Length: 226
Image (cartoon, rainbow, N blue to C red; front, side, top):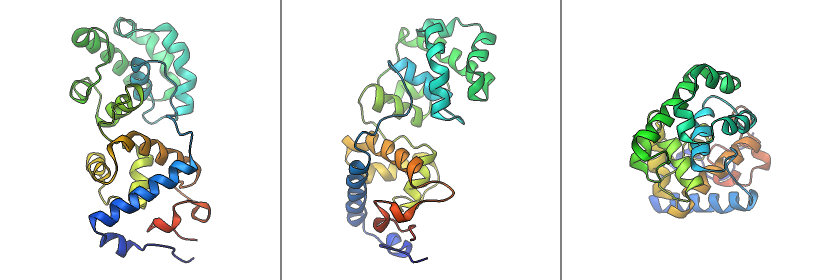
């Protein structure tokens, strides 16, 4: 197998300007490859997206999308989650895995939203991450996709894996990866870039067997082999 394009050693010696330019070209090509990129989770409100994102931990988005329609019909508002019977809530989210912890998390979020925000999901980073069980990744997903606010890059497993394969970062901690990506990309593209990497990770740059031969950014990827 022959390596193509930039090598890992060249990537490690890249100037900040060169890495920004490479990141920009990766972004442009992925935008062409996935022109209709969107969040895989279905939602109709910030509350629904917040709860769906909690359920998506260690679970596929497809399974979450199967579970949430009856869940949101049963619990349409934060006050409903706050008042929910925990056993009933557990049964409704059972298929998403870790259902006891997730049911408790949804109820606690409902209670916190009622106590601190009048039942509304806040539209800023600081109050979001102050909610129980909400970290920067979840907050970025909600802010970027429900409120249209680019406050950061949502670093999930796809973003973590692909950004390292592309040598856009060599960090392993999600918050450090996020800082590196923020420094490379225009603010208005932070939310979109995460979605593009998610699409690319599902379709082409798979965890076990990346399909480098058909990858639109193979010549820009130090990990690519064909």
